[in-house]
Image (cartoon, rainbow, N blue to C red):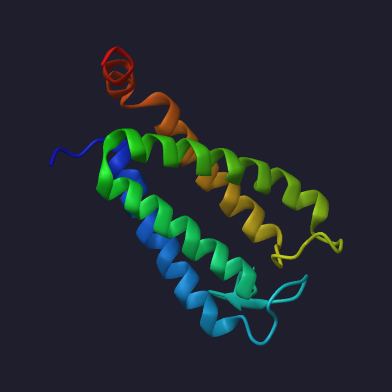
Amino acid sequence: MTQSPNRLVATIFGAVYLLVGVLGLFVAGGNFAGQEGGLLLGVFQVNHLHNIAHLIIGAVLLAAGLRSTPAAKRANTTIGAVYLLLGILGFFIADTAANILALNTADHFLHLASAIVLLGVGLALDKDTTARRATV
C-alpha cells in the first residue's frame, strides 16, 4: 500500500479524533447537549453530543484513510469544509441556544486549524489521483 499525503492525514486525524471522542466521554459529565460541558485537557469544552461528533468524524476519516487515496481526499476536503464552517460559526453561536455542542473559543481555533490542514491537503495534494479517476 502506497501512502499518499491524503491517506496519511486522514488516518492520523481519524485516530486522533477517535481518541478525543473517547477521552471526552470521561469528562463530559451528565450533559448530553447544550452550552455546558466538561473540559477536555483543561481547555476544550465538550459534552456527549460533541464527543459523538468527534467519534463519527474520526471513524469516517480513519476508514477513508485506510480505504484509498480518492476516499481520503474526499473525506479530508468534506470534513475540512465542515470544520471551516463550524470554526467560523462557532464564534457567533457560542453564547446562544444554538450552541448544542458546548463549543468554546479553544474549540473554534482547533476546528479552524483542523480545517486548514484537512482542506489544504485535500485540495492541494494527490491531484494526479483525481485526474486518473476522471479519465477511467
